Length: 286
Length: 339
Image (cartoon, rainbow over all chains, first blue to last red):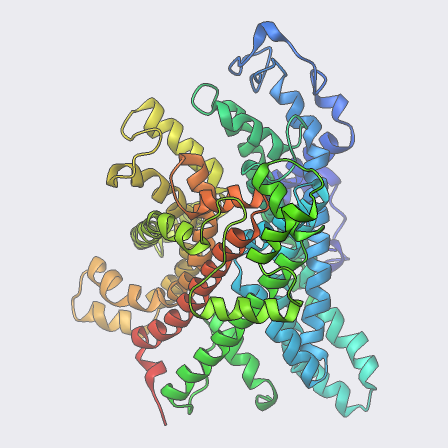
């Protein structure tokens, strides 16, 4: 995309272009590659199986043999983190999809529906917004009972109202933009204006938001798991690792600190990617 | 611009983003009445949603309640179910139950816990104080940390801006449980400055409040930093410099006052997030509070307790945002103008 700006200049080689990247984007892309590899092909990175026990080596601190230490059954934490990547990313991506789908539907209805629809959906969003996201999630878990599907739905629905408000704002500001006035003046039909101008312009920022919300969703989901309301141990999913390690905070802090650190790194990665995507998309508009 | 057609949404998004002030030319009292009415409507909607969440619990409600109480899942005889159905009015039509529930909310009756066999309001009253103290302390800590950090790092060259902004972003993204564990391990276990568990006294409050305050400070800092740097470039700063005012004085007396406006708006929202965070923090530090009660109630599906606490927090949250709107008008005299 950036290469098209200066077509006359000779194309830089791939490695030269990588060096031109801002350092934070470079780090985020590297981290994404590692996370993707761990999710798709965990056996390549892991040193042991996720459930392999070693009862002689329980609650061992991080060492050269066990990089992240071991848990109460002597399972290698590093390998468990690697094997848990797929489940954690799955929850994050699933919740982000649920959240943004709901947000687009509700946000568009609130912005483009007829007067009663818009008012009703607007009120619904206000109501949903009155519940802090974690509480909305807890309410759903209380009704549906804890499971991986509940976790995805709970996080997705819990974070949807905020995004729906954003979508509504985007559509409303696109609807008032000069290019829409121009299209109206040219006599284009309502449907055509919606398809060609309003929706593309107002939904484009969602690409960046999607990246951001994957990381946020994983943080939310891991908070719920930490409370014992998400995915249950002994699954290697990151939130479940936290839940399992909680009982050993005072004797084996690494069991919670390290999975937590991995979650923080993932959240930072998606935030950085989202920010850069956002600025690329904004440049693309001009 | 065709402003008129979107004016109502302008006012709304303005409240959220803190960018566009409410429309001028509308009297302050009318503004307040409108906000109060919409807050009441929102609470009514929240109560309705909460009621139907409770009613949608799968299975026969009386059986569910008995099983929750006994901690086992078995079929129940009609003789066992009858007193439960009578106690919770489960044989009434749904609409009657709904109005009974709404009437209860108005007079402060949140129903009885399935598990503890006590009124929900009494269970909440026992635990609420600890959570309120924690939340408010965290809010105060967050503002102190944010103001000091932004005043020290904003507008002092690219390096300090990059470092300041980086810490804002990282702090805002830290999950509460993780930060809590780190603080616990470092300051309670290794250094022994604070008690590890419990400690309802002021010393035991420090680490949990910091756990809530640091991400909040990062979040508020992100909003304040941009405004702070913009305000530093404005003419009134130049004027103050010409009058011979010191740098610190300018930053604290003039720039800060302009820069904190978005953070004040966000504080209402942040209060809701902080209470959510309190649920997690209470679990990390094994502190008493409604968060602990809520988590226990969610895992045992004790719906009246879950809904009572969720409703209470929603009400608190709506009220806080209402107050923020009013506080905004007090800090920024431009918004007090009526015509």
